[in-house]
Length: 115
Image 1: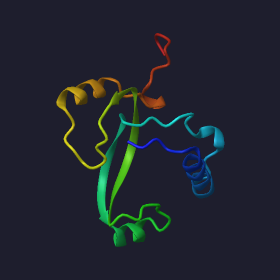
Image 2 (image 1 turned 30 degrees about the vertical axis):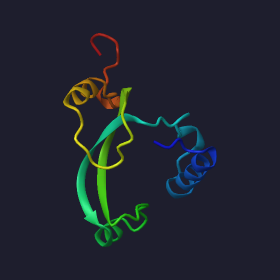
Image 3 (image 1 turned 60 degrees about the vertical axis):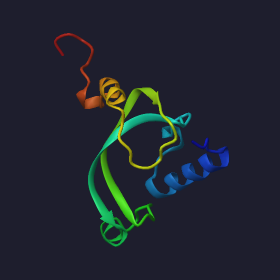
Image 4 (image 1 turned 135 degrees about the horizontal axis):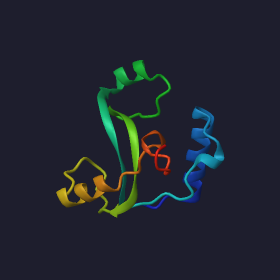
């Protein structure tokens, strides 16, 4: 897969700063390529016209849009070939990935027994 140029990264940072108010220090320090980085729940698939109606400020211009929630990052990034479309994930990679999902703050314990 293509490694983004610094100019592309800067343009995306600026877009998200303007459209969502994300602060500069909230962006990741680097963007891995050719690997499985996490998972999401796909909650809907909408044609562009319906997507525009429900999400007037949405950023996708695709004919059909996957509406996703609950993004989860993997602690270990699994190397993958450059498949950018939908594909069947190898069951062994799926099992290994499921074991390394980073828990959300509300799912983590305090780390102190009894709390």
